Image (cartoon, rainbow, N blue to C red; front, side, top):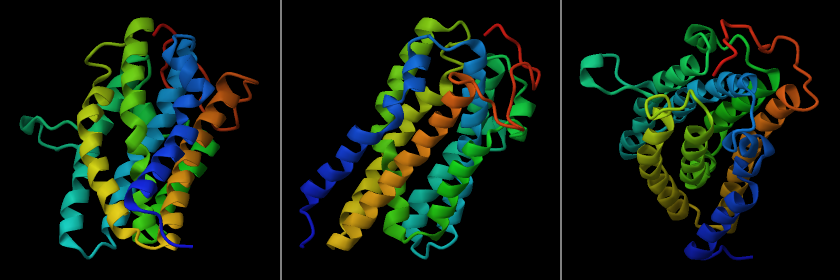
Amino acid sequence: MTAQSRDAFEARLRQIGADRYHDKHPFHQQLHSGACTPEQVQAWVINRYYYQCSIPMKDAAFLSRCSDPDLRRAWRRRIEDHDGDPDPENGREGGIRRWLRLAEAVGLDPQYVASCEGVMPATRFAVDAYVRFVREAPFVAAVASSLTELFASGIHRQRIAGLLEHYDFATEETLAYFRRRLNEAPKDVAFGLSYVLDESVTKAQQDEAAAALTFKTDVLWAQLDALYSAYVAPGRIPPGAWKPGDGGARAEV
């Protein structure tokens, strides 16, 4: 079989998000509608932090084997967006620091969250698998796995609106992570999508890229499945994972 046209291949990638992106997961629907308890919100913040803090390591692993300086220049901005600038006078606060501000707002000790001590085993397995995939996969597949950002703006807008409407902790300041990603993510995804479309010239390469994007949606979905099982129903918290009240948590968020 021959490769798809550029437009048809892009439509294929977008359909993967339409079918499989984690905005459809019951936990997110519960979170955005205000139905989560304070403890469930805290569990989400703790476990999602492990994903957030692993993203720069994933991107650094990608850069470590990238010989194209143009690609490196374009990609390293992702690390800067998450890690920020160590000099506060430059005013470039990274996404990780903004996430820890959210953690404090929902009643958690930021140092506890940053320690990743209470992260669920399933979260670690899923996120570590993603980092390993990007470190080892062919370049086009590694880039394609980042294309869940194609669908991220919608979920960020839903989240901002839902959290502001339903939760006292939610303010423009505490939700700054999501607001900033509305500006950062489109630049990243425009580059990544163009790269994947340009470089996927054979059917095998297109299939590999589509499989990589499918894998990434599975990584995101698996994290929420574990979160729902542990803190919603049946409420079976795995050994070593955070329990309500741990980590200096306050109930009133």
